[in-house]
Length: 185
Image (cartoon, rainbow, N blue to C red; front, side, top):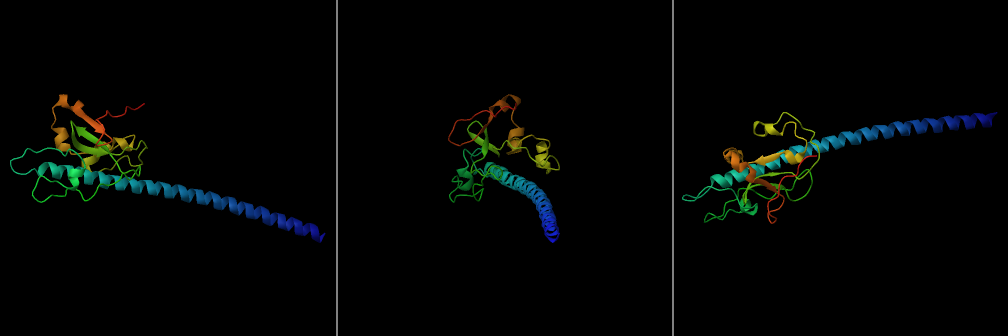
């Protein structure tokens, strides 16, 4: 009789241990989900910061044209690091930032002809942030992909004549020729 009681007791302990392990596993999965969401939101904030740094650097380059020279957009990202239009090179950007969403070193480039007007992430992922953007980025609200968050030097793009809007083409590399933006399916 004592043996059966011992087996029954150890069986109940084993069942209790399995239940505790199952609940702990469910709790850990919830914690991982929360961590993943928090990490993605942090990456979104980094993208907003980095994209704004590129936009501001393009703006500074445009307005910093030396006296007697026409204002123009930068031809590539390297001139934002070292603008040699001056006797002492000017830095409009401290470094080329990687895309926080993809982790890759390059951004897509919004080009007007052969000049860079802005950048955007190459990620097709769906952003968590859908509203409550800074005034400069109100058009990001409701966008389907991070790729739709374009950090452009707005005064240049906004002042283009309607027929030149087709000349604005994103480019994923400063070396490759301009390509058209992928269409949504």
